[in-house]
Image (cartoon, rainbow, N blue to C red; front, side):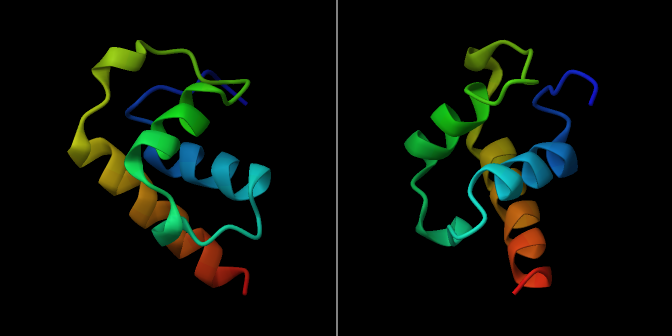
Length: 70
């Protein structure tokens, strides 16, 4: 997988689902979500560049992935 950046919303969502398949994305606080994203092995972007809007978009994309696999 290529390097993940804050703009890789769908790829990050997929990676989060792979790493935490049983976790309901809506139960994850943004502070924890941020940490989980920057801890992904392929994540290669400035952690400070995250915004609430990006985190929300990632969370919603992850939710779709989660619901599709229920």
